[in-house]
Image (cartoon, rainbow, N blue to C red; front, side, top):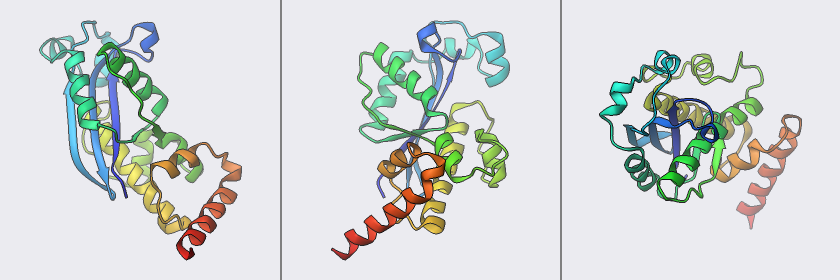
Length: 210
């Protein structure tokens, strides 16, 4: 199975279009259900961090004042990711900041994002909620550090993605739950999921028999 880059940002707010900026980024590379590489850095985007964000993340203005510039960090992160497909928990949020920060660094962001929120809603409707921490506890996955810090959240999202891929193989007979499959699955309505799974299984059997 091909490698996937799982990303998480910490930011000053929820919307780059409103002037919010990233304060920390982490990317972990997942291969065959195992994290094989990591990148993490605080970044100085030249903006102040609101006090409520510091209370949430523990990231202070003093910490980012000594951090590398956002442009250099994003250039490093882009090199680390390369052309890998990407995954995030609540991917619409992380994709917005990935695209916005790379644009400010003068780089393109062509990467496709799969979302573990959307995937977990389809596979695990019985979960008490689809927040990352709740799903990690629900499935007794390892907590790798403080929540609302980029590396810990990226590693927990990678653990959740690995569980999703495992369950797709073991419970649903999906031989190759790769990124392309995940993208198709997250676009599928929950009610249509059994038909989607059955059609994919039949297609895989036909391909194997050809």
